[in-house]
Length: 71
Image (cartoon, rainbow, N blue to C red):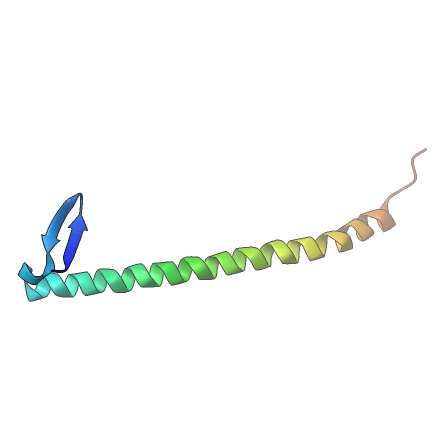
């Protein structure tokens, strides 16, 4: 017996209507897509951190070359 638990209540999937079963399939698809998108966002966040780290020495060099001597 396959079950579905929502809001702490368990339902026997075999007793659900075909429309309800279709909605479960839709939910499973959306949950999978959200997981995929979250994983993709994590990859982009990691890449962003790497690009920022690679940029910092260039900015520091620019700062050093444009620094005016103190009087």
